[in-house]
Image 1 (cartoon, rainbow, N blue to C red):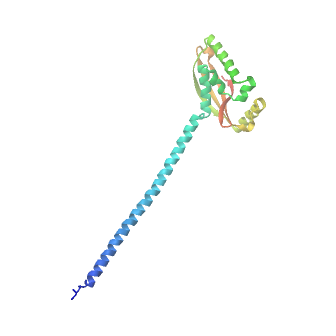
Image 2 (cartoon, rainbow, N blue to C red):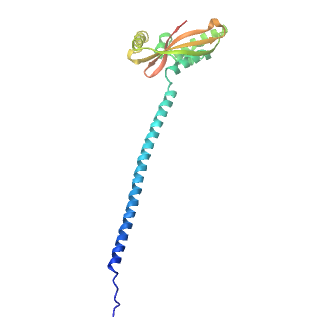
Image 3 (cartoon, rainbow, N blue to C red):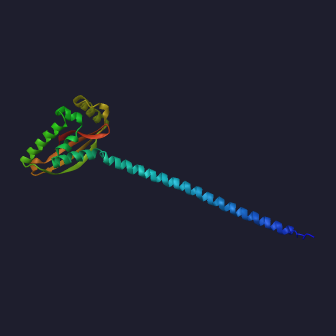
Amino acid sequence: MPKKVEEEPKNEQIINTEAAKAKAQEVADNVKEGATKAVEKVKNDKILLGVCCGVAVVVLVLLFSLVCGGGAKKAVKNYAKAIIKMDEKKYCKSIHKNMLEEQYDDIDECYENMEEMFDNLKDEDVKYKKYEITNKKKLDKDDVEEMAEDLEDKYDISEKDLKKVVRFSVNFDAKGSDNDQKLYIYVGKIKGKWYVIDQETRK
């Protein structure tokens, strides 16, 4: 005769079912909390990544500016250093090619001319020891337009290509007060690059 299986009391089944539901709910809550935290982390990581990318772009722009010329002040410094060091190549490269072509057949002739001039200064014992930029002034729109017209007439540089002009006051200290120089040096931005476009003696 088969053994009779005793049925589990109903109230104990209910308790077990409720316990299972509670456990399932706890697991679901844990999963939900974990998912929420994961989503928040992804959001925060995206924000952090965006900030990092933004900083990286700014740094790259600054480095690019430094490598590719560094603006008006960099141009006038290169020009002044060329005079101090009597470096004919750096001197000639500070000037727009159209302006050089007005005076010389090619840039090599500019090198030769400036080398000769620097040699003459050395023979006369003239040596510039240092330079100092004492002031700078950004020219207003009317002055820029006037200089742009002048560049187009004399050197065939299109008016629209000259975007900005900055005037620097530069002092050159030489051996002997008679050889000291005080100049206004004008640098202009032509097609995104800065060149020395004019200079004049000042008091």
